[in-house]
Image (cartoon, rainbow, N blue to C red; front, top):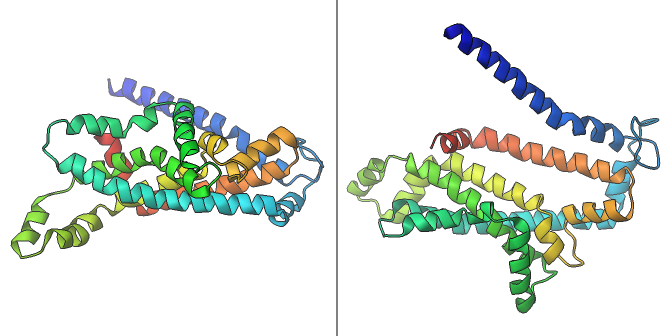
Length: 267
């Protein structure tokens, strides 16, 4: 039996490795093309040059779209954390009837197709005259980011020992001080992971931006329009920079939010 388990684990590891390599194969094409000396997308590149990165840095439209995406993602992260953390405390700690239904509804944006959410929000935002406003896009992205906050923070909160809060209360601490000094510091892995995932989900979101951003394009929408209108290696250079940014964010998530994702998967 042990031998069969060992063989099964090896085969599973090989299969997982092949899937991982298959998923990474596009990067082996995008990275060289971003350094291509050709005037159009060509693989393998005839030569190497940094001109497309320079073109990205010298083009105000690309820089404006990047700055706008960072602003949208930052505001989305603040809103998602500001709304999601108190909501999670209510969902986990409350004993009111129907809380489980609210807990399931909080994860609905993950289940409902983004195109449906985009159409619904477009109708609402059109009446509120928020179409084309970057903060309106941030509010819309918050709807998609909120489930990440609720899921990750609730996983950490359910594993938290409430006896520590009771001990702090017995020593005379008020509940605001208990939450700030006892509970939240021990939820740091979940909070950091939720914040980074909220930022990434907003920074990479395209469908909502296509409906709500108007002429004020975010970086994903600018990349989409560039592919539709003009295909040159600049899009590959921007893709590489975006991949590196997301990779750094995921690295920071695993570094500072260690244990949160593992706790989520085991619950």
